[in-house]
Amino acid sequence: MKHAIQTDRRQAARFPQSLEIKIQPLPQLGSSRTLRAGAITGRIQNVSEGGICLITSRPIEKFSLLRCEIAIGDVPLHISTLMQVRWTRKQNMQPESYLSGLEFLL
Image (tube, rainbow, N blue to C red; front, top):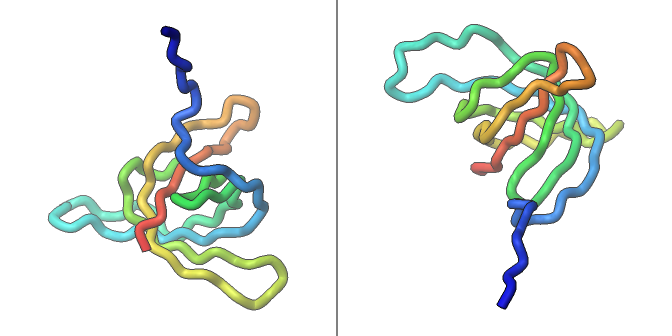
């Protein structure tokens, strides 16, 4: 009996978006490293039940904890949430552009 091979590891549907996000890296507990950068602004590419994919002009360190402020269109409203970086990679077609997958924690 043949079994289907799952090529997409995604567990939830993705919904395309184009929302601005402001990211503030948080210090890691027990770490002696200092944060080298302040707030980062990016653009959300898609949203799922578990997290977001975003585009930034610089990489975000894997497993970093982030305080995020998501802007909702032209409305003067922001959604605050805590997220963790699950992966980051450079975009091949756009120099100085990075994709990152962030998981919702709160």
